[in-house]
Image (tube, rainbow, N blue to C red; front, side):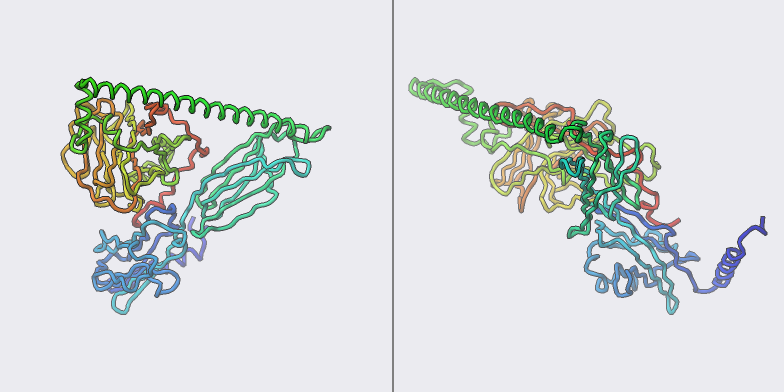
Length: 550
């Protein structure tokens, strides 16, 4: 067995052992970094770890992480403190030293909110007196973009032209066309460009001439991460040219589309006429109601309910009850969710009215990797597309926590500043720009108090009332009309957006309609349109989450 070993490998091993023996009893040391590249997702946080061998206390050393040049400092630790004056502008406020094990010679620099520009080679430099050593690290920033999206452009060159587009990728993804049997089809052309943030936008084209290939798939794959996204399109066989020209098939299709569009226009006109008729009926009802009110005043008789409502309207701000009457003082808002602000573990319905938690697709992954992801990204949130800078507004939401809710189940509803930081882990408190009502561990709470709220019944449908001028944000149980909680005299600044966060299996939030003609919520079953991810796509290498080397 010994004779079969490579002689050069034995020589290198012997040299390392001699170096270790020579350092015993002296101040000499080695600096060691990760042996594999550190892989991290765009926008998340990561660490660049280094350690010394033999293990020793490095508190008195100069520790420096830099890019290609020594002066391009990412972080500098010297004389027992951070030297911010030598730090690059791009890393100010984004880098900090992790020194939990500094007395054992193990330290790391944590970088927050990874950017494309952070991708590349780093060096860690340790100096003690006149002795210094350094190690090289490689950081690979991964951006998993949207797409692919496959479109049928039309007939071209005796076939059907297809395009496959995707955006927000880094590095440039690998594009591959395949047929229903999995056989690869080469692209006719591929165009790519980078936006101002360095993310790639891809467009690949293909002309399908074989009428047997009625199903064609386009996949985009990250070359480093191995994650792949696929979309398939079906081509009607009648679209392919045969003995008769293809124009006949398209002419028939466009004729049918013309009939369909005509029907849509007619129905829209009919709907407008119906709304006009209903408005006229409503006006007649209002006139009749005004006449009745005038008659009541003339007769000097009013019902107890009418007198109570009149008194409420005179000083409604101080009366924390009668949610239905309170709505008359506020403008109903048709809130819709902003998919671009949603955490990647959330599913937004097609009508942008419901958000739910993505099912755990990581069952086949290393459990420790998934737990680290959960710990580093504990708040799964999404904003509404609406924004408010003045006026009085209200909207209603319905919360479903499911029948198998556990202690990890949590949700929050309210508003947040459009400048609030929502990357990674954060706390939903007013100081951070969040004014929310939260549900945690089976109890309703607000961030400004450690005590739990005690409503008459657990609210499933919640009304959110935002009074910008008076600085008031109130929550009501819209089932029984009872008041839940109010943030009194809130100093509102900048722009506010509707805010939602949730965690736990089966948890979902649905935005209810607040129009005059209906107050129903959409179907609680989300109607989503989600790009298919192949099995195992979300598995992340353990090196990507490792804080420090062993």
